[in-house]
Each structure stands twice: as structure tokens, then as C-alpha cells.
Length: 428
Ligand code: GDP
Ligand code: IMO
Ligand code: MG
Image 1 (cartoon, rainbow, N blue to C red):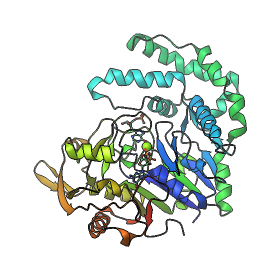
Image 2: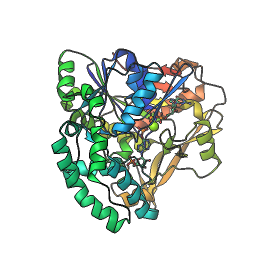
Image 3: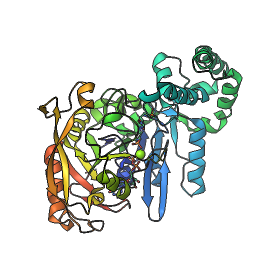
């Protein structure tokens, strides 16, 4: 089983970091293939809690080679800060490899992210403000700065000049901000060159060679299916492909290698930022989930919007990603509820709709149709076998599995590393 992908099946924060950590001791390489430091993965190891943003979670496992591939956008300052903070806690970060093709987030991308959001007012996306969208926009517009450019001052200056020529007009004339100096940006980027140079490689070649040698490579998706720029709730999405296909283009490996796709899905749903969310709860149950699930953003600290499990979303994710196994996380958070609603379909303009409507407007006003399952009150955080769970919890898992389009192979019952039930091994 040489290539494995982990993707989020909802709107992010499903517990992908913990799932990566769970299998990381059996893999050789872990690759972040999309997004940037908009991601936030919390991994709890013993008494230690790690919050990772730009680095893949697999970096916490000794012996694994962490890779940041071409599909990622890198803020060099954040990268270095994160590396130094982990080193200071005794984590070996010396094996990190980064792609020469990855794009760089600069000061003007961060500024543009914030000002465009402010300009959108009520229509804002609720981005993380890290410069992700503007950096991907420049990549697609062919005016981006890549990692390799910081090793060639002449080219770097040319590219920054080109980009700022346009952007300063925008910043000054439209957004009423000060112009950004070319020198300021160039000097800042050059200051990282020496530190980054030893890490930079052709990561597509590195991963191809590793896969040919039979090494196991884990592709760790940031964000999630419903935040994917093509398949998510556009425009309320991130600017990269967070679905399994993104691993092929985002790392430069052949699509046929991605035979194992692990979808991470929470036993309920959360979302950060704006956009449609049919099962969202604006009542004491929403508060219950937020409080018990500690649903506050790892990156921005924002309270996450909370709602019930949405089976059409899980089914959609299973289909778009080709999910072979789901990991159902945070089942423990539902403990104490008398009955647990699960969205099985939607009502759109008085009609029952089984799948996510193709029209974003319809999805905006889709009302969830619920089926109700009896809850449980026993503490399940110590359960390690499926049969350790109370009958009602087992029934909930089996019901959800039946509606979600792929088998549920593991179940999270607490934040701790070992708080997990394995029903089918995720790796052979
Ligand atoms: P990611 O972005 O998908 O990696 O997820 P986050 O780290 O942003 O959010 C998931 C949070 O849930 C983290 O704080 C994890 O420690 C925690 N977590 C993961 N699995 C479980 C679980 O099964 N139960 C509970 N209670 N917490 C979990
Ligand atoms: P992980 O990897 C949850 C959301 C933001 C915003 C939208 C666009 O931890 O699951 P961006 O800054 O990417 O342009 O913001 O996407 N968002 C996330 N929500 N988890 C994440 O990552 C997210 N990364 C981005 O809140 O709505
Ligand atoms: Mg997160």
C-alpha cells in the first residue's frame, strides 16, 4: 500500500492531524500537498499538545520524512517560526524537504487578503487572513513568486516588480493603503534564502523515486472537501484543491497511485467562516457541541459554527474523493444527548432532495430532513473495541455508515493519541 491520502470530508477540523498521527509510524514520507498556514491541526501526544499550521502532522513522528510539495503556498516567516518552535520542544525537523515549485506568500498577499475581505463587507468569506487566496490567485495569473525564485535575486526582483506594479495601484487607489516597496519585499524574501536552501528539492522526483522503491507515502490534505475551490461551497471555500485529486497535481505523482483514500469525518459538523451550512444549530445544542468538542479554531481562535451530521455531505465526499475508509471522529462529544438527529436529505422549495443540489442558491436555503437516533450517557472515551461502545452508540455509527458511502474503519473517542477504535486496519 504505497500511497495513502487523508482528506477532510466536511468543512475542515475533522481531526485529520490526529488521523495522520495514528498511522504515521507505518509510513516513510508525509506530504502536505495543498493550502498553507490556514490549516490548523491539533495533535495530543501524552501530556503534550502540538498545533501545526504549515508543517504536516507527520513531522511529529520520528523517522518520517516530511515534505511540503508544489501545491502548497509557503509563508517563509511562518515556516521558520514553526520549525524553531518544534525544535525547541525536542522534535527533529531536520529532514523537512520543500518543493522548489511551491509558491511564496509575501507581505502584499497578506495585506491584500485582509483588505479585500474588509472591502467585501457582509459578503466576506471569513478567510484566515494569512494571504492564501491572493497567493493562489497570483499563481493562476502567472505572476506568483516561487521558492526557487529566492535563490536568484535578479529574477526575484523582476517578478516582485511585476506583481507590485499592478498591486500598488489597487492598494493605493482602491483600498486607500500605502504602496509597498519592491526593496522591502525582495530583502525580506532574500533573508530566508540561506536557511531554506538545504531543504529545497524536486519533491515530485523524490516522491516518485520513493514510491518506485515501495516506500509508503502519506498525502495529508489541508482544509476539506466542502472547502475545495472546485467541489466545495464556492465562493465560500479556500483557494486550493483539498480533495484527493489535489494530491496528484499538488505533489506531481500519478493519480493511479492514490488507491487508499481515508476520509476524516466528524460525528457532527463544524464550519469556520461564512457560507451555507444546512444543519447549523443556533441553539443550546450548538453550544453543547461547541463546548464539549472544544470547537474553537486552532489557527484563528474563532468559535466554530456547529451542527448535526450531514449524510449527503459525507456521501458527496465519499464520491468526489473515492473514499475507501472513513475515520469517524469525536463520537465522544455526542455523549449525553437524549436523541441525536442525522440529516438524511434536504428539503429545497418544498421538495425532498437526496443529494447536494448543483445550484449553490438551492444549497443556501436547503433545509435538513432529520432522522433521530437514541443517544447514550455512558463515558465512551475508554472504549478501544467496537463492542466496548454502548448499543446506542454502535447503532448510531452503523446507521451513519449506511448513509455515508464508505465503511467507517476507525472511530475517535477522545483527543488523546490512543483514544481510537479500529474496526478495519487503515493500512494493510
Ligand atoms: P484538523 O484540522 O482536521 O487536523 O483538526 P483540528 O486539529 O483543527 O481539530 C480537531 C480537534 O479535535 C483537535 O483539537 C483534536 O485534538 C480533537 N480530536 C481529534 N479526534 C478527537 C476525538 O475523537 N474526540 C475528541 N473529543 N477530540 C478529538
Ligand atoms: P484545517 O486544515 C477550517 C476556511 C476559512 C474560510 C475559508 C477561506 O485545519 O481543516 P482561506 O484563509 O483559506 O482563504 O479561508 O476557508 N478555512 C478553514 N476552515 N479548517 C481549515 O483548515 C481551514 N482553512 C481555511 O475559515 O472560511
Ligand atoms: Mg484544523
